[in-house]
Length: 151
Image (cartoon, rainbow, N blue to C red; front, side, top):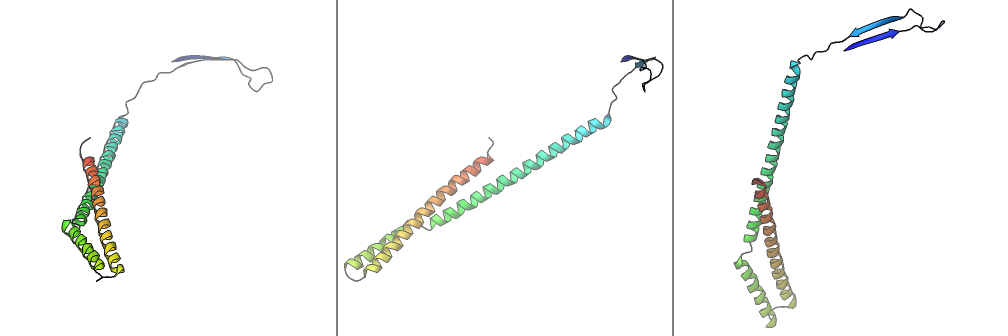
């Protein structure tokens, strides 16, 4: 770039007294290669890659933990449900029928019949709760397995 400046002195008595003069200036600019910049960009990019890799590994561990917890919950629910198989249900029905028969024949009192009825109801509720928990565990396991499959 080129420039020209002309200086005129101030009025008499001013602080800017001096002879007039001309100034000519020239400026040349050239880009200088900075080798450190490319190296810094490479280091920054590598740091981003390392951060992304660490994030991926952390997410992978979270998914594995989620799936393992879902499998354990599923296994526990299935084991609990197995406690209420058909034989146990049939035994509960048979015991209630025996209590009813004993009561109608006068061999048992009302509180014994009510106790048997309550035991049978508790058995039915526990079996239904086990079925519901098994269903929830199955859904959770399927959702966890779906998180492993590629989208």
